[in-house]
Structures are given as C-alpha cells and as structure tokens.
Length: 365
View 1 (cartoon, rainbow, N blue to C red):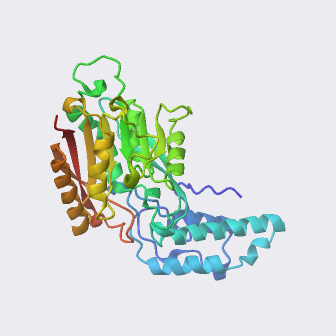
View 2: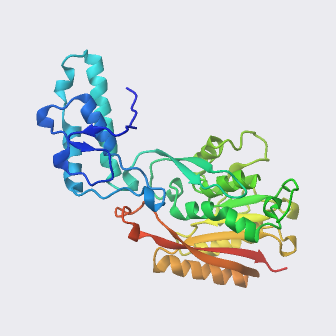
View 3: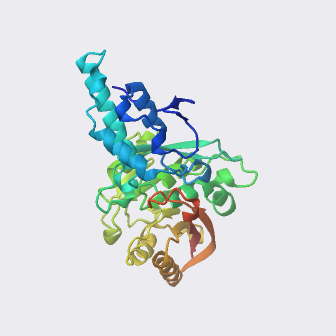
C-alpha cells in the first residue's frame, strides 16, 4: 500500500499537527480500536524530520519521549485484528503492514541516526546575486560499521551555503563567473573533492560553478556517491570527463584513476570537508594534496573545513595546519561558522551546535 505521509492540518486523537509537544496520552489508544486512517495520520504527525542544520527546521522536543516510544512498541506488537472488519483479507493485511512499517520508522527515528533506515534529503542552497536557489537531493543509506561517509555532516552543508561568498572573495581569479564586471564564458577549471561522502559540497560546487568536479572517497562510499551525482543531473556521460565519482584512498593516493604524473592533469581547486576521524588523517591529507594540486604559480586553491567537535578534533585541525605550512602552503584566510549535526540523541537542542573552522590555502611558488 502506498504510504503518503504528508498531511495538512489534520486533527488526530485530540491533537493537531503543530510544533507543540505531544504526550502519549494524546495518541489514539489501542484498546479503543482506532481506525487505519486515524493511526496512519497519527504516525505521520509523529514523524521526526531529519534536521538540515537550519535552526528553524529542527524538530521540537517531545514532552513524553519515553511514553511515545512505548506506544510505538505496543503498536508494532499489536495484531490490529479489528482492521479485518468490513474489508477483505488482502486489504486488511496491507493496512496492518503499513501501520507496522510506519510505527517501526517512527521508533527508529527516536533511536538516533545510526538506527534510521535509508533516507532521501533535499538540501536548499539560497539564491545569490550569481545563482538561483539550488536544491540538492541526496540519498543516505543506513549507517553500517564505520562507514561515516554514508551520512551528510553539518560542515558540508555550512560550506555548501558559503561557497559562493568564498568564490566571490577568493576564487574569482579562477572562476570567471565571480570576477567583477566579467561577461566572459566560464573558463573550465578542474575541481577535486577529497572525502566527498554523500557529495553535498562537490555537487553544489559543480552546479553553482558550472564546472566538472571529481568527487572521491573510499570504495564502500563511492556507489552511493555516484548515485547522488546522477540524481542531481550530473555525470550522465560515461567518459572520463564531466562530474563523476571515483575511488581515492589517502593511504594509497597514487593508485587511483584520478592520479596523474602529468602536471596539466592536476586540479586547480581542491575541496575538503570534515576529513578527520583519526589522528593519522591530518598527515594523510597534507600528503595527498600536493599529489593532486596544480601549482599554477600559486594560483591554485585548497578549501578545507573541520568541525571543532572536541579537543581531539581541535588538535587534529592544529596538526593539519602545522603540516600544511611546513609543506610550503600559505594560509590565505580562515574563519569559523556554526554548524549542527544530527548524530547525537540530543541533536534537537540547538545548543549542541559546534563551530567548523574553514580555511583557504595556496601553494607558495
């Protein structure tokens, strides 16, 4: 049975769809044998939308989170036998399956991101003086093991929204679109994203900059990354040119179809967002960048953003900064932006935000 969970102003079990907290006592009680329609609408209203790290869209707090979880558990365990009344057996079983499936989803949403099933999210990049509003649609599979690249992290969204501001101020010498008074066609520039994850930053760059971007990550991340590239109308051709996803392991950086010894095949812009999850990562990234960045007499640029979640990530950021300077890269500009993640169970609280450090580097010629 199709499941359409969008409802407008429905009143169910005594409460209306709103941002007001819901109590389990407000929900249709099973001993009263609520109808399929009533339970369906209730489960739709209980949906916790995945946050997009924009405070206005953060879900409201439930006054009775434990009670609602118990209610959902009881609903999953109920045989809903009264659904068989007045309809044929096939229809009743389809309705029961729909309610159990929705109740399971609502329960998973309350267990944190790692328990949630595959989801499709749409990320909105506001219009600017250069571009119309942009909507990027991404698939996030269920998280498995340590495949953190299957999730869209807050830093990539912050940087995707900031991309045109940075482009105008610091990349106009490479991207004609942002040069003052320029009416020239955009000169083609090679762009690489390292550790692209679900691809939000790289896909946004490809669409806003109107440039081909190579988005790279580990082998288990790339299939979903490639699907997201195609989902947004990119990478439709099968040639080696155009926006595409490719495997690039930082521990074996030269064993990738993206790598080339030819200086002309290297990249003018490298993008990196939220790259550090282990103390070895700053050194690996600082070692990969020179293998892929075109020198261009110091005109090439590297944009790196790191969320400062805790003392460990701050230390890794400092380590990376030191290594880049030792490797003959100049820190042109840096700043901080507030970002939010939905990883923690307490993600509903906007006070859980962290700051991401962003930086733009150039090679010293």
